[in-house]
Amino acid sequence: MRALVHTISQWAEHKSSWLVLFATSLALEIAALYFQYGMGLKPCIMCIYQRTAMYGIVLSALLVVIKNNGFTRMLGFAGWAVSAGWGFLIAKEHVGILNAANPFFASCEIVPNFPSWLQLHEWLPAVFAAEGDCLADSWQFLSMGMAEWMQIIFAAYFAVFAIVFACRLLDKKPF
Image (cartoon, rainbow, N blue to C red):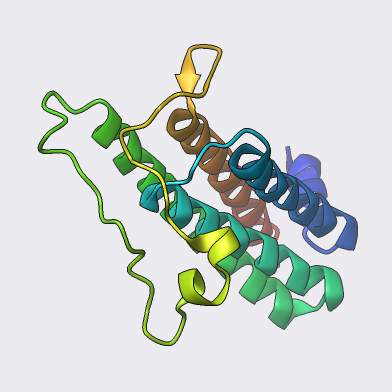
């Protein structure tokens, strides 16, 4: 068991592990843009928040890919955890909106509520403008919609974070 903990702990020190995190999260962002522009599915505000959370994972991993040391890994772990956790909560809320007993009372904003110093929807409207309706759930795969899949994806990202970080702590190498 100790050898397994040590092996998983060591993964965090390899650029290739962070590159896998970067590549998978970037692939999901590219898929989101394909859904938007290739398939014509307009993202709602909740989708944009989930997209922002996924970009948080992309940037956190990229930071460590560029410069892999204890400090950047600490920032990478923090960004990964916050982004995966926040993405999961947003996806869960979106699923709640879609499954609301009375959809007239389940609504979401039209304009993203980004901080005044980070107006992504104004800087990059092609990526961060919310043009869709939160109640639109036209895409399905294995009888689950986009929000449900994103909830699973963010949960998986957070679970992998928790396992790797726990192994780092057990191996007495936090970063």
